[in-house]
Length: 161
Image (tube, rainbow, N blue to C red; front, side, top):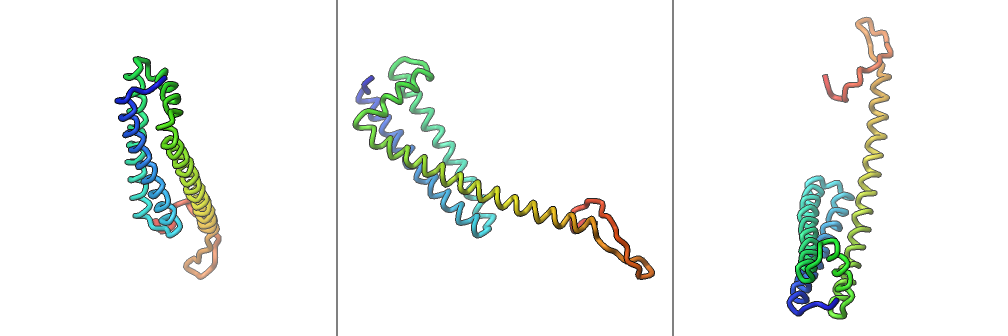
């Protein structure tokens, strides 16, 4: 199914917007990785907020492309998804679409790597907490006469009274 000149122009604009958003997303993922490695909590929080904003923009691009295909062909959104896939094969669109696919794959890999790093850190923190809580449960104390006693903790967090 061929594209009308108007639909082609609109689709080209949406694809350019999507490509720029993916480039920003990849840059934010790289910033997030550096912040994770450095343990910079504020930078991590900022990265998450920017990732959420860019994700909304990418979702909007996807919706706009489906609406464009649906309106241009008079089909439902589900049917328009197939039309959109055909449009991506058009010679003037295919190179941009391939760049978008490549960027999306790079973003996915970077996001998975960051997620793996976070899960590994969480596991290490959990192990440290388990050790600390276990040590707290076997805490030795002294009574008024100076006799040592093995005391079991009440599972209160360290530092709580």
